[in-house]
Image (cartoon, rainbow, N blue to C red):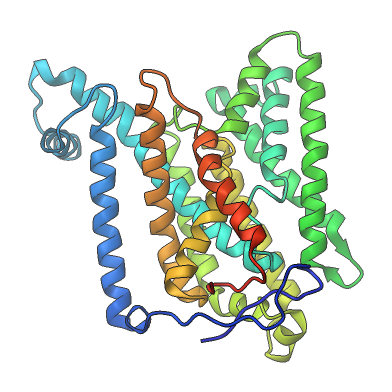
Length: 372
């Protein structure tokens, strides 16, 4: 197994002689990977059904499955069950599916971003995308732009804001020799503060409280606005993005060793980084547009998978979507039932999990992708 470590110049706490943690041999075989995929698929299906049925008005799993089957096959629902059927099919099913899709996408984007910038503490939002999305959403809300898109105007504004933010970060971080991973991270952090300042000024000057509510949604995250109309586009973008990122598994393995090593092995690191940056920007923008900025998922999920499976990106990218989906489905469920009938913002819950994980990673002496 390859040992993947950060360069000491980019991680001051790096241990120059880390010891690789080997992957469990069974998990690296084709049989083991097939069993992994089967088990994770079953766990995800069970979690989705339970999450759809649970909530302030709980529905037993048997009735949940019956309602879902009736909706898919055009079955008959008794009149006295109409309200519960609508809760299951019209409200909770699109919400839970959206949570699974966004969780899967954030897990894969987190893996790609950490490898792309060679920084274990990076996630999609450290590059300023959440702040950029919030600026776009607030601008649409306060200025009435994109009104031709109707109810999707604010989501479209958030999507365009996220893409514009990542494009600006990339352009500013670019130098004569290409894009340095460290410069990319530092530029993202700096511009993130700039976007937040712009957002604050817009809200301060806004005459109504609508902009304040909008920005709270995008900065704290929620699946409360999920509906069947918002699912197809984000699902298509996330699935295509996952396929593209998985096709770059080997270049990701090599890039974590450094650009010079990648070049010696025939990998064009700068070109691969541009491709990854574009794909992750589109994926993140699409997810932020429908769910708001949900932090720390892209930070925590890749490390959980690497600790279990090791550093190889082919294996990590095969499992990270399932782990991200499971994580997000259960976090969303907790947000709905913890203080029912009110909801906790998703960003609060992911921060309660992600902040301790972030601190633990910061305090580790030396980083090794997949090592202890």
